[in-house]
Image 1 (cartoon, rainbow, N blue to C red):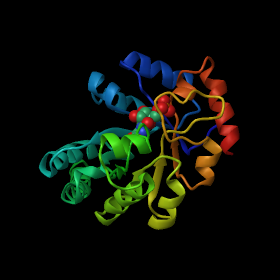
Image 2 (image 1 turned 90 degrees about the horizontal axis):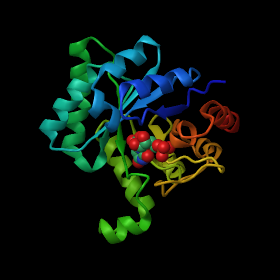
Image 3 (image 1 turned 90 degrees about the vertical axis):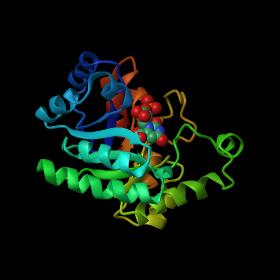
Image 4 (image 1 turned 45 degrees about the vertical axis):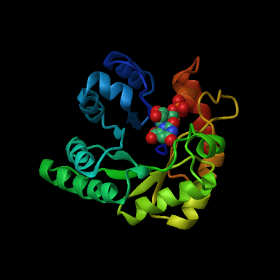
Amino acid sequence: MTNDKIIVPLDVPDLASAIALVDKLPQVTFWKVGLELFTSTGPQILEILKSRQKRIFLDLKFHDIPNTVAGACRASAGYGVDLLTIHSTCGIDCLKAAAEAVQVGAEKAGTQPPKLIAITLLTSISARDLAFDLKIPLELPEFALQMALLAQNSGLDGAVCSPQEVSQLRESCGKDFLLVCPGVRPSWAEKGDQKRSLTPAQAVQAGADFLVIGRPITAAPDPVLAWERICEEVS
Ligand SMILES: O=C(O)c1cc(=O)[nH]c(=O)n1[C@@H]1O[C@H](COP(=O)(O)O)[C@@H](O)[C@H]1O
């Protein structure tokens, strides 16, 4: 069974483990390469995934000054990936520079530009963390919405949000704004460090375009069975 809405992260330490996971789950069409794997092995995994006709979410979550982020976005766009992340809290100048940079980078490399999507608020942050540790004087849903609108007004293609905020973001940002939800947990899976989760079916019903689901599949005793159960739930 396949489901193009589900993105599985390759949160593993080395290339051999990444390839083993891709081999174990041939049904998965969309893989995420994040900080751990990219830092340890560099871009080689991207070529491997492309040679297998997989779609790629390059999740490097850029957060720096505009000039630095723009350079990183130009370089990333050259890899011909499908999705790329940046934090909304980089600010408007940085978001605009990033949006322009992916176009420039892709054109220079002769590839399609990735969809640039902004992290609104990490799904591992609770309302309490936001108020007491980060000292943000806004209710969490309002903060997430403002970060999504900032990204949209800066010319980005979409946002990453928890499934708990996705319906509100969908209503405010419209149907063409891409909404990607990590922090998704089937009722039978451990929550781990995710603090604002919903089930796969609830996240899709709430308006998510894509779900990012890692450990419930990759750390399951039988990853193929876990994948099948989740696909059944969302179909
Ligand atoms: O950008 C992301 O993908 C992301 C943003 C966010 O707010 N929360 C979040 O969990 N993620 C990523 O989504 C994946 C979730 O993995 P699991 O918690 O194992 O399902 C990880 O690879 C995270 O890096």
